[in-house]
Length: 581
View 1 (cartoon, helix red, strand yellow):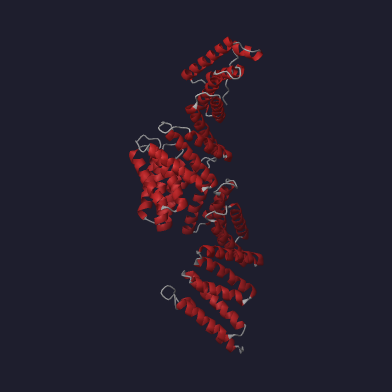
View 2: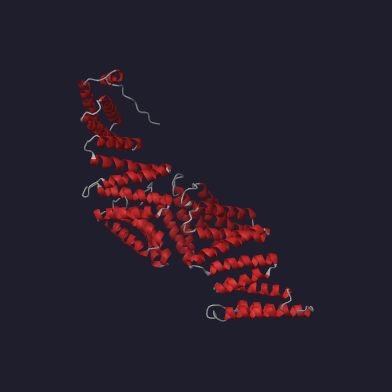
């Protein structure tokens, strides 16, 4: 720990402490403050600026109210606080400087540019403190003071681009924290203005590209992503080899190419992404703050390529890079939860390849940790909880441990509870919950689980119906749960509705077709037990016609044919046993 010595009060300062100063004494104290400032400019010793501030505060305290020089003296104190802020980076100094400039302005002192700078200093300090301490209130304050700084900076002032850039960053941080789209729009607008003012700056190209990429992910506007990639290519081309931010430009370019691959499945994009990210890792100096992000993004790119093209060397390379990235990530890094989550996804891919259950266990551990490290009001918490729920469901499918399924359901409920009503993945969270509830019903036979699952699936269809977006998945989910209800109760109405939904949905997936055949057989059996042979065969004819007729080019008929065959066998079996119809 470093301790600073404190200088003893001067004779003039001692006089002020024990009595009023004469004008001559005030003048000498002002001169002493100026001398301390001059020493500070040479020595950069914080004790000199401390002494200057102390003297200036005493001069102001002893100045009669209403004198013309009071505003000038308060402005000078604000300048000194600003100098100390540049040295100390303490937010209290930035706020004190801003307070002095506001007071000086009210007293008529000419402080426009100094006030704009003080506002900028305070805004930047607030954004930085939010990054360290996650104080949400700092974001609103930073946006407010930075906006004011920009508003009072005249067009043509060389500082305008710097202040606009800080404002754009503050808006982006607030969007990332709260997920409010207008903040993202404001960030894009601010960074566009910066780029228009400084079109040759690689750093400003990078910042605009960054928010355009985020905007593209929110709106699915491919044009934003294309513009972002073009800007980053230009930033990389125009940056000098010694540009300290070159690795960041390469990182963002590689990340955007990876994103384009996700949207287009263009193999050239993911191949180029990996090559660019390798270069980013190579030019990143040891200890650079971008190093963990470079390695994690490179690992994620390899994992994505494996997921699409199934080359085992890709998933092994991806996991290796992610392990290095996580090892370099600080425990206090705000990106740690997301990195743990992405690493968990890569482990799941390797588990699916090798079947090694240790990967499955580690994935769950990592995703639990990611959730634990994330506050309930963080926008990413809902997605992390859902990922944990899915992981626990996969673990249960392998281990059959009911505790995993129970925890999965709890995590899904939490994901829904903390989500905003307009969360883009909210319906997926509900679907995962309902699917897990139906799975647990088949184990425990709890009517409450099945009833809740049916309610969720019905609500999903109602919501989709209101927007005209009902899919075969919506229908098959409800059909599956209704079939379970029939198996539970024997009520044919549930099975009738189940098959009707499959018929309406015209399910195209192979497994879904086979499950439809199973449900047709169940329905036939149910009708036979009610001794209604003709309706049974009639219903089979209708279903077979529905499945084989209109959808013949798309739907294979094996499932229906098997159902018909099994149904006829059941009829024959009942006749052999002397059953009457």
